[in-house]
Image (cartoon, rainbow, N blue to C red; front, top):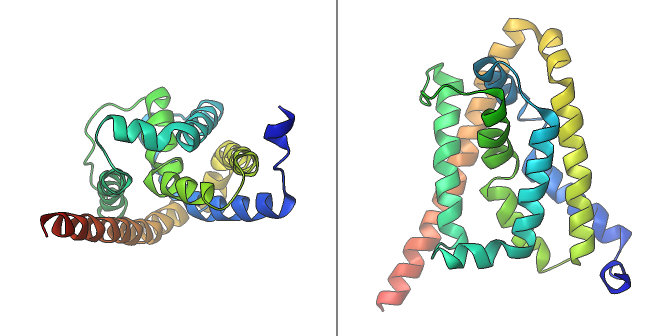
Length: 204
């Protein structure tokens, strides 16, 4: 236990926390959260936070091994996540329903809120990158700090909804829908080009 905590470094903790905060972007996801709340009726902040925490820590420790077990690399995983984000962004921009299942608060709190919105392909790719630079203890603490922030934002969603009003929410949905679309396209093109290049190199 002492060996595990011996790698604690405040500077590493701060940097890892800021990187994860930027990638998770829970504040920027508020319009998407409100949209999910409208469809599901209600969301469960604690459930979402705990599932997100479990996914991120689990992936930090076992992620690459699990993906390899199924014959999936991190780039393929990122491409799959980008397609889900792409579909969700179209819903926000065009006001259409692509996911026709009856979504309940319990299921929406896990999919798509905990995954892939919070603990998505971008977050997981970032965790793999952080492992190469920082000690695990600092990354785990950074994850916990970000999960607390996620919980607070989810708890305040109803107040934000009242404050913004229907008009403000509609505008934010369109704006953040376009931003989410851009993120999805970037995530897709970056990883698909790497995959194509890797396949081309293997053939040669």
